[in-house]
Length: 447
Image 1 (tube, rainbow, N blue to C red):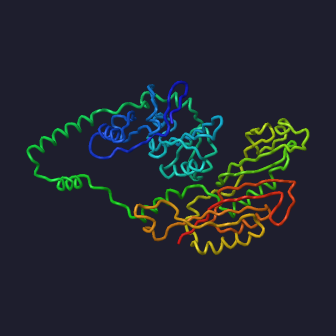
Image 2: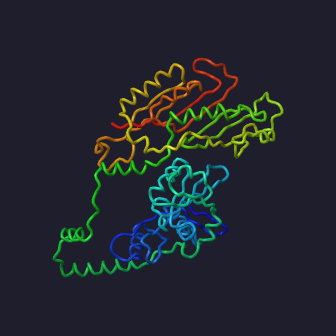
Image 3: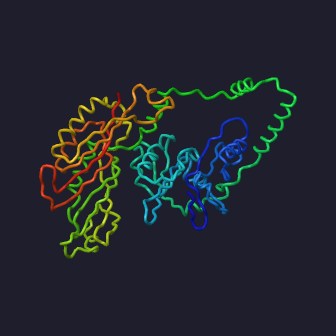
């Protein structure tokens, strides 16, 4: 993504490669540039890494200079050697965009120069960063709340840093340039040489030459499917999650003790937490003006707005207003805590599945879906993993009074979203109440 800040164009979401093999760094960088057909790259003379534009940005017809945001960040003395830059970019009429750059040991980290459009991907990326660097690092940008996703036992500090500052430090060293033609000239010479050798005959056939190359550059040892799968699970272990037995009772307690049903004459309509994580989740509470309400205005809402509510946004002709709430969902938990020793899929279906079945007579829906393979499928296929982790989605909807059952849910069951709908005019019955809850999540097992 190319962002124009005060006439200077910063690039986020570049592809980065580590330079390996024989040859000078310049030649290796030129080789990669030719391989991916890059027209502009970032590389310094002796740097053992290089970067190039992603496919979408490479197609843009821009004659101005382009500056790598990651390269610029790696030259800020107070931020290096380790820094994770996350900048929330809000724009009218759409969801926020997150610009991310990860710097490890003073250089852009492969896989961490990204443009992210959903918070689940962002959370996974933030949680994964501490596994890529040792010791302390800085969370840089305008999203200090992300510290909650990072390990509490690491020295991590937040540094306010906006795009204007990043533009200031983006000097000539961050400019993307055309790749050098050294490698192309060298390859032309090789072609000429091979033609000459072919004319006089070559005592080695292709098979002998390939064997010679394998001896000269032996391939790295191949990991077994089990090792590849274990590495993938390890990379996911730091992802924040919320155990249903802890997070859902915490949410209902927050609703019962903190969230008022009326604010300045406006009535609570819904509370939505679209991505539940621990220790805290961002939720949206919506208040509305009912047709029969008199005297309720935008001003009365703002004057009575509770302390927990932030960022009010009026909509629907000023008949509804959304406010953000930071809801505590319990102590921090990671996916690795769940994947450690989960139950088998059949015992979990017998246990958790039965709990949901018991709730069906008093719930609109209570279902556990089929279990599927979880994680990276190795090239050899799912059958190559003897004891894979399995995951099944589950959903429950019904009266809030059923929430007392959440505390008994198994430890390997997580909650991913919750929505509470309020209708004070509803006539309660077996499957209906003034407060209706819809919860979705995942259940993990290992056979």
